[in-house]
Length: 81
Image: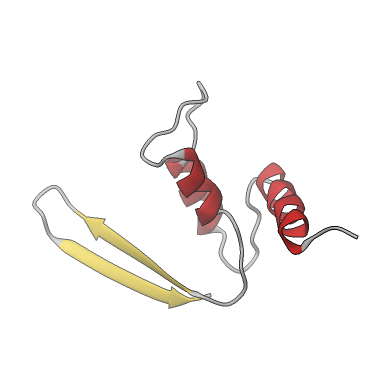
């Protein structure tokens, strides 16, 4: 019988292979794809463990996104997912 971390790793790998499909939150796929690897396989802004942690669904949680424009104005949006 597989351990919990092995089951999670399998589910996350399948989710990643399915391009982070989410009916309830379709923007997640776009965010993870953009923050992740480029077409050349290099990471844009995050290290590989950070991308893996972001892509690991762990049940109900709160997600926060902070957006800063070029003038330094910030917007923080939180959502329970």
